[in-house]
Image 1 (cartoon, rainbow, N blue to C red):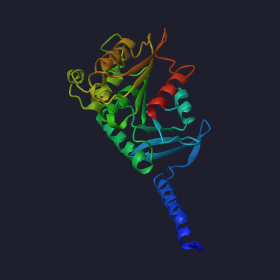
Image 2 (tube, rainbow, N blue to C red):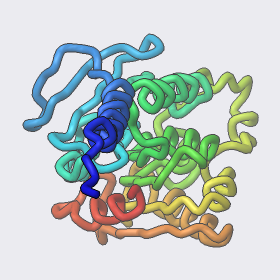
Image 3 (cartoon, rainbow, N blue to C red):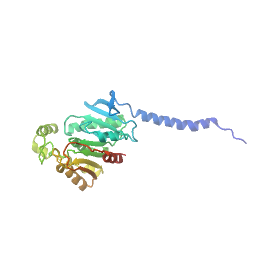
Image 4 (cartoon, helix red, strand yellow):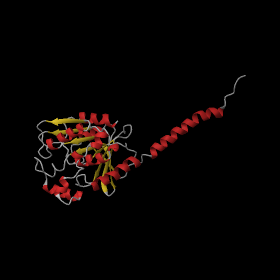
Length: 279
C-alpha cells in the first residue's frame, strides 16, 4: 500500500529547526546592542565616545568582529603609536579605553575599570578575557587590574611599561623619576608617608603570583637604554620574577633605544602573539 506523506509532519521537521535558528539569532542580536555615543571616524574604523561611571570612554569597532568578540584594552595615551591597536582592529578586535585621569593605577581608578569591564562584557557581549595594553605608566594600570582579576585576562602587552612606581615616578633607582607625579601618586593611593608607599605590597613587581598561577602570557617591547623608565628596574626584574614563579614572558628588546619612540616599525610579532593567546 502506498503511504501518503504526512504534510503536517514534514512542515514540523523544517519549521522547528528554523524557529530554533531564529531564536538563537535573536538572542545574539539582543546580547549585543549598539554602542552609545555618536559614531566618528578613527583611522577608517567606527569610533564611539560615551561616559561610563563618570569617566570618558572610547570603543573602536572592527569592520567584522572576530569570533568570540576579542578586545584590547588600552590603559593610557590613546592613539599614541597605535600600530598594534590598528593591527588588531583589522583582525576583528574591538579597541577600548577609559580615561580615569593620571592616577597611576590606584584602587579608585581600578574601581572604574571594574565597572567598565562589566558593562562591556555583560551589556555589549565582548569577550570575558580582554588583552591588556600598558604603554609607559599604563603598565601600572594593566598589572594592578590584571593581578586583581587574573581570570579576566587573556594576555598582557607592555611597551616600555612602568612595573614599579618606586622606579617611576618615585625616582628611587637610576632614573630621575617625576617629583610632581610622585606627590600625586602618594595622594591618589592615600599613602600617609613616602615610607608607606615604598613598603606597599601590591606594587606590580611584588604582586605577580596570581598572574603566574593563571598562566597569563606576557609580552613586552622595551628599549634597553630607557632613561625614563629604566629597563633594568622594570621589565628585566619583572621577567626574572615572573619566570621564577613559573610564568611565561616574551621580551623584544630595542637595542640602544630610549623611552621614546614607542612601538615597533613592524608590529606583526606583537599582533601575532596577541592573536594567538587571545583566541
